[in-house]
Amino acid sequence: MQIVRFSGPEGIAYGTAESDGIRVAQGSPLVEWEQDTDTVVGYDEVDLLSPVLPSKVVAVGKNYVAHAEEFGSSVPETPILFLKPATSVVGSGAPVVHPPDTADLQHEGELAVVIGKLARHVSAEDASRFILGYTVGNDVTARDLQRSDGQWARAKGFDTFCPLGPSINTEFDPLEPMRLTASVDGEVKQEATTADLVFGVAELVAFASRVMTLLPGDVILTGTPAGVSTVRPGQLMEVEIEGIGTLANPVIAGRQST
Ligand code: MG
Image (cartoon, rainbow, N blue to C red):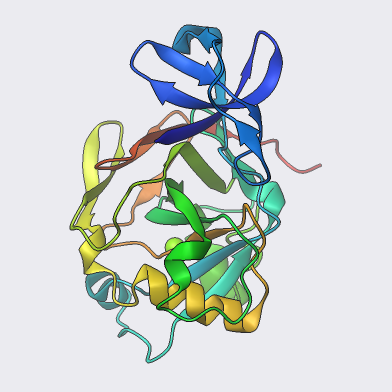
């Protein structure tokens, strides 16, 4: 099942993506919902939104060997966690705003885990019971600010720096080697499979839930493969994961500070 959240003729709702359109659900898959309705709206009648509004986005650094190496680093012994604010989340199609504060805005295509149930001190063996499904993420980063600040809250925390979507696949198997690509204006920059993750999804859910309670709708960004590159206003970032879909976001110029 592919779950989408959208703004349509009747307002904002959840639904399931079907070949002839979106079957509109009542309620939310994070609480309680009724999927089996008769209402179907066309894809051209809606704007897709981020499939969830997380209370927090827990992101993982250096979780692909080749990406750690491109920064002259190695993979850490335990996952490196950082947070992106809820206010950085946007959906597929929404613009990512290039702030004037950075001269090096970069894409990071990532597999995103959507938590479905409150998770605290969960074991890796039990982790799948707490996962609603998987979507596509782009951990947009101001690389120069990440280096100069020494910590990452500003570099990764601007509004619009966390595109998520287009849908949540509830049957996606993260242990299968599914192709992940990130491209800029159609040119592939990052390419890997989800099986290349150093710390796997179950291990990441267990690790993060020992630190902070994960709430329904929270998202874990699992890290990015090698090939991150600089984007400029006017360019289009696309992250695609086989079996989930394509997350597409244009880059636009932000306002100059006064
Ligand atoms: Mg990242």
